[in-house]
Length: 418
Image 1 (cartoon, helix red, strand yellow):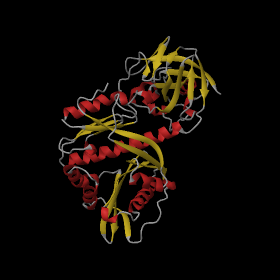
Image 2 (cartoon, one colour):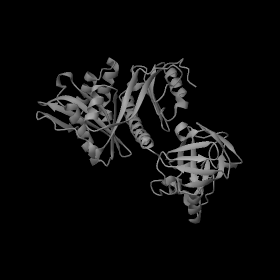
Image 3 (tube, helix red, strand yellow):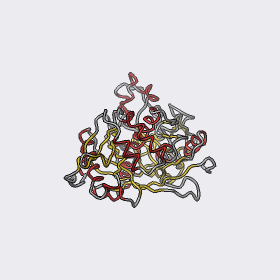
Image 4 (cartoon, helix red, strand yellow):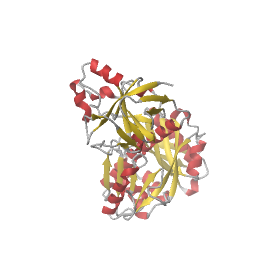
């Protein structure tokens, strides 16, 4: 077991630098007395407390950077080990009460640029300097901490933290894919009111009923901000939905459950494409078949289904979005899409017309999209599917492992959130 020491506790009313305090209580939502200027980029139960090692600060200061404890916004300055080299899920027992668990690296942003010579704030990136990153943590047990408190380090006993990190990568790719779809719908002339704020994304479309265009993303990590989705839906006069991993208010029940499946791009085992089926990627100028099949087989409200046919022309020109079609005897009978985001390939819109089902076409579409994701440099493939449904079984058959289960909650104007 490694051991260390708490050097400084830092808080601010928003922004940087954070100033030292003699003690502070730490709760599941962060350090009391501390605020974030951008609450969608920082904070929440999975990013409650940020940490940085004094050793990393000294290394950067020795290079001529004007950095000091608290200037880049860490809540706890620690010493004794390089926190960013520890695996996710590592727990730190700080003082007599507090226990936190590492949940991810903090992405540097322009707010901290004044702590670096030439404003080169990328010096704090875990990707380029893995020993010197700030780290987020979630609070396992609340408590009060003070400078000088001892820190005991316990390595993770299982893969739960890694699984949560994989689920977060998938959800961020799903969010990017959904935003591309909403923007294509707006470009096609539909009224889609979009909020894109940090890691939150909320869409509201009064003329397109149902979850595809009336949905909130990002609330697994930021459930404390779910009121923003409710207010956005109410302002547009729509009923909306949000995916979360827990009931957003006491007694709330999901109207659907989904599994999130993940697989390494080299581990997809979809089997052979049926001899009479051709699966291919559509060119940017090949539009019509994809939208028509999604409309026909998607099981959506008629207006919403028609919107998919309308938006295909615009979605086809989205750089990170790729459409695929399965053809049987020269006729399009199935479709799927791939959206790439930070080396993750997100699969969606995988549908097959009823008369062509049962031939392995869905799995063939998964295999072809995975192969293309590999060519584009992705290391991970993900998709969601209704729990217990055919698509979930297909994901299992091609080698996906379930990394999360989410509930979809209906959010109306009177929802008792917050």
